[in-house]
Amino acid sequence: MSTAELSPGSQARAFALSALPGALGTVARLTLNTVLIVVPVFLFSTLITFMLGAASGLNPAAGIAGDAATPETIARINGDFGLDKPVWQQYVDWMSSMFSGDLGVSWFSKIPVSQLIGERLAVSASIAGVALVIGLVFGVGLGVLAAVYRGRLLDRLITAYTSVVSTLPPFVISIGLILVFSVWLQWLPSAGYVPPDQDFGRWLSLIIMPAIALSMDVVADIARQLRTGLVAELDQNYVTGAVVRGISPSRILFVHALRNGSGPALSILGMKIPTLIGGAVVMETMFSMPGFGRLAADSALRGDVPIVQGTLVVAIVFVLFCNVVVNIAQSALQPATKRRD
Image 1: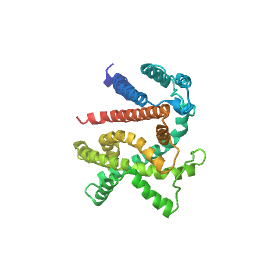
Image 2: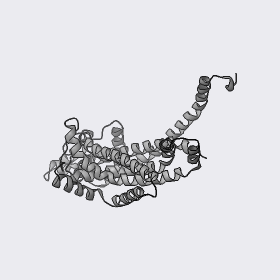
Image 3: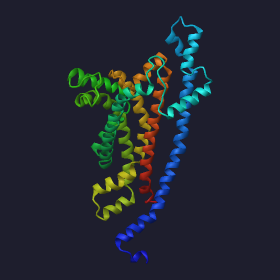
Image 4: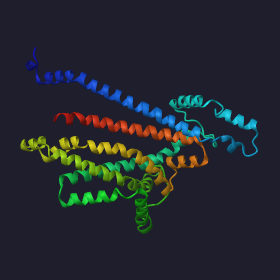
């Protein structure tokens, strides 16, 4: 029986089955390409992280045993932490433990590094996560408005706003927010942290200012890149054809043009994720929050190498994961682009 003789439902099922091998091949290629990129980057990054700690020459024996430590005491402490082994053996042991979720123990508090990071990570995740949401919502909103009203007053205002905001460092914006909302209006607290499960309202009031300060650069860059992509798409022939066929402007904009024109904005988003993580460290310091970044900074000043290495590994994994998500989103948009070719 030919395809033309099948019922509409059977034709749809036949088309889906015929397209399945191609879809599986696309997924397989995407997975393979991701593995070939992410795994070498992860291994190289962790190697550099470990070698920085090894090359620092820091040793816990002096800090634990004190100035009156005997050679026997120092040797015992080094043996407890595995520092008496060759560097390559230390790296192999460290990697083996890391893949099992063990990031070692603090040289001074003897508390597992994974436990310390888990206690502090929620603070940094709150700041960076809320900043990312603000950046996406307002960046997409402003970018769409600027593209729809291109050449008009609203477009010029949005362009001027993004140009100014992108030149301001987050700590400058933080100072302005603290002066306005904490000192003058006294609406928001300027320091501290409360978990959201303990008091959600208090958590939000403490998180919102550092998140806004950190998100402004993301808002500006996403808005500019999205405007550029949408303006280019709205000038394409397929948009003119859709208008002639009577498709609604909102459907043309949000279903077709936005999908095809969001590639540059997604690319810039992948580049901004490490900035959000690094900026969260500054925000934690300015707003006196006991977060992931302050843990890394305090441990570095103290010379607690396992904690510094652990925080760097977690940051590397987070950045790689977010970039994989962005790459998958870009790949999902690619078929829409190819249909115009």
